[in-house]
Amino acid sequence: MSKTVITYGTFDMFHIGHLRLLRRLAELGDRLIVAVSTEEFNAEKGKKTLIPYDQRTEIIRAIRYVDEVIPEHSWEQKLDDVRRYDVSIFAIGEDWKGRFDFLKPYCDVIYLPRTEGISSTELKRSLNRFSSISREDLLHACEVLEALRKDFA
Ligand code: C2G
Image (cartoon, rainbow, N blue to C red):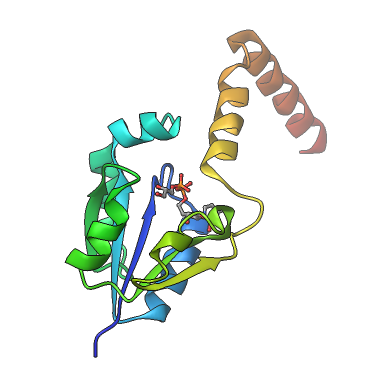
């Protein structure tokens, strides 16, 4: 009997933490459905994404562990999705531990360890730090690096 796994997420600035999660989810069953948060739902989650929904879904669709991509419009759709797609396992990162236990009467609920040291939020923070460096400071840094290169050439 085929086992369908479903998960939900924003998957902004796709990174190794997302990939490792999807790989582990694919190992749990025969079919993996990923519900990607729409811009409107991200606003409800208080999340501002850098990568637009159509590109986030295109990236997720391209991943060989993923069999189907659907939109995540609301908090309430999960039970409908479990029924509609005959889901055996709902799984998500353990940062959500306990939040979706209401699904337990309808499917297995699994919270998986996150990949430490990386998050879309941290990536965005790093980008912001870099973009806040003035043009003059960047040019000065290039001159210093050029001088060091000459000294050690
Ligand atoms: N994740 C991970 N390791 C990281 C970062 C994220 O395992 N270093 C996992 C999260 O635990 C989540 C998935 O990757 O299961 C997607 O993470 P986000 O894009 O941050 O999604 P989130 O905002 O948690 O949305 O209804 C549920 C929500 O839509 C989940």
